[in-house]
Structures are given as C-alpha cells and as structure tokens.
Length: 383
Image 1 (tube, helix red, strand yellow):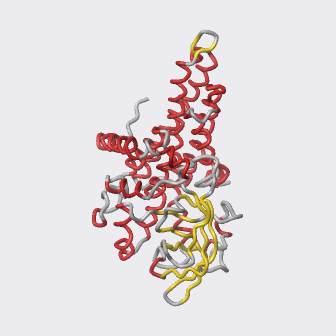
Image 2 (image 1 turned 90 degrees about the vertical axis):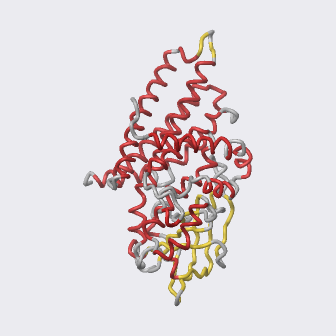
Image 3 (image 1 turned 45 degrees about the horizontal axis):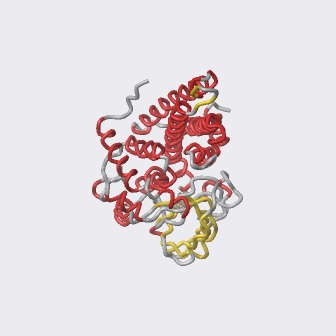
C-alpha cells in the first residue's frame, strides 16, 4: 500500500541525509563498533549539514520547522543503512532530549544552550535510570539539595545513551527526597562540573557504536539557573509529557529496522539455493516472508498515523505505547525469523542479519519495557 505520510520536501531531505550517511557514517562504522563510541565530530558535521535541531526556532540557529516527519526520515535512513547504532546518538539528541529544552527552558537557557545543540558542539543526554530501580523512577535516590544559588547533586545513573560524549545531561533528581513523584525535578548537569564523573562505557550485546555509560555525581554544585521549568517538583510531569514522542521515535526505528531485515532476507533467499532451487521458492519461505511483509505494512501505517497525530499535538500516551510495544516486538519477530531463513549463515556476523538480531533485542527494553507499555495501555482501558 502506498505511503502518504511524506511530501517532496521530506524526500529531498531523505536523499540528502542518505548521502550524509554514506559519506560520514558507513565507511567508519566498523571502526566505531570496535571503539564502542562515535567521534564528537559526527555531531558537529551533522549540525553543519542541517541535521540537528530541525524544529529549533531560527532565532537560535535551528531549522524552524516543527515537523516530526523529518525526524522520522532520519530514523528510517539510519536503519536502512545497516549502520544505525553509529547514528542513534543523533536521534536521541533530536527526538528524545531536545524536546525537553524546547518545552521547559527559560529564554536565558535557550540562548545559552540551543545554538550549541543545533551546531553539534553541545551533545545531549538524559539520565533517568538508576542501578537497581529499572522503570520505577519514583524510587530514584539521586538528590539535588538547594544550597543558596546552587543545588548539590549526589547519586548515580546507568544505561545512559550518549553518556560518554554528552555535554549537557538532563538529570532526573529528587529536590524533595521526602516525596515520590512530587519530589522530582529535572536539572541540567554540564560537562566539566566538579564531581560529575563518567564511569565505564558499558559493553553491550548489540548497538556497539553507541556509547552507553554509567554516571556518578558527588557533591556536584549545579546552578539553580540550570533547573528546567519555573519551579521544583515538575520533573515527573515533564517526563510523562515527553515520553510519547520518545516512544514513537523508537517505534519508527523498529519498523524501519524490520523492513531492512526483510529486504536483506529477500535478497538472500532469491540467491541461496538448496536442493537445486532458490530457497525463496519453497512454500515455507514464501509464507514466512508474506506474513512478515504484511505485518510490517500494517505497523508502518499505524506509525505514520501516530506521526500525523504528534504533528497535530494529538498523540496520546496510550497510542504511543501501542506503537512502541507492537513495533519493537515486531522487530524482534522479524529479525529472528529472517535469521532462521539464512540458516547457519545468519549466525555469522559478516551477514547484516546477525548484527540486526543483536541490535534489536534492546528496543523492547529501553524507552519503557513492553510490560510497562501494556500497563499504560491497560490503564487506558480503565483497568
């Protein structure tokens, strides 16, 4: 079925970003996979080419185009390239962290931070998860206690994407440790602040080119001027309001990754022969691939409608949770069944499907686990 989400401007943007990937990411991605991190120059190069801060007002150097379809194009093209992990920091920067700055920064904060976010000299991250608490953010123990014109921050975060490269980290803290949700605030911690330390770059099952770090805070003095929002205690509300876009971003990438895995597999089964015939001609292969193509098409159209809803300011937490849950589970099913059709070769890392399999497993966990998504959807049913 023909997609109607994109217009000519988006397709021109797609062509430009595809060329950027082929020139700036694909040739270097194997080395970055071994390094476990991309160079900071990837962000400044992306910024110089107009691929960061597309929705940031022109006043601060951005594109001034609040249209999430451009973000979706970036996610789709990264997945299509087979070098997605090397570019995931860009989507986190644009899709997940930047919206907090646009929505909650004061004018002074916007002038201080947004130009660097757009040109890539200030790399973004967000730190919510702590060791041992998983999805239970209200139980976090990282504190920010007011001391004059500063907060004194103590605690630790883990599984932080862009954690090594980041210059600005939005940290979920307890400004009132006696409270749960109502005691949470968001505070921007900057590179170089005394007591702010990066731990190890975590060794992951997949997505190796993406730096994922442990962060620690020991008596870090953060100016009160770095609080997001006009007052303390708004952190949980701020997180909840921005999670739908984060989850939709993950859903978009998941569908695109599934589509890419299917494409690799179609090429393989048309060329690989067994018993004198291409394995794609066998009934089982046809049926499996027909099922996967159908499910991807259906998911793609649901996600496209979610993008339209987001642009219209109508995307609900429930609908975004459905997109994230269904599409990441679909991604897992697709890469697993596609690997099976590759036989033993699918287990060899020289084949793209093996990397896709390892990279896919985390998507059902980060941004909210499948189980949490079902909880959100269930509550939406009044249960």
